[in-house]
Image 1 (cartoon, rainbow, N blue to C red):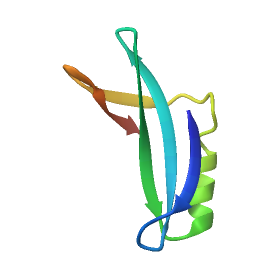
Image 2 (image 1 turned 180 degrees about the horizontal axis):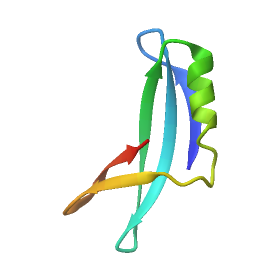
Image 3 (image 1 turned 30 degrees about the vertical axis):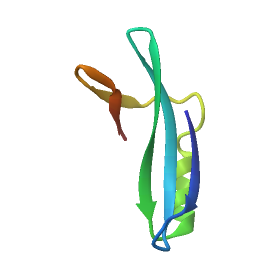
Length: 71
């Protein structure tokens, strides 16, 4: 897992949490994005998800490439 924050399309900042997960031996990856109005809030939020931390992931039954991070 890794994280960053970027400038959003509409002027606010976005925290991005990149994660990787495995289902039946297959590797998948996705990103969770959360918008913020204040840049420091996006940065602080992203920093909470350092590499090596674990988060809960929900995967769509029968279609493991579709997931959502439970953050």
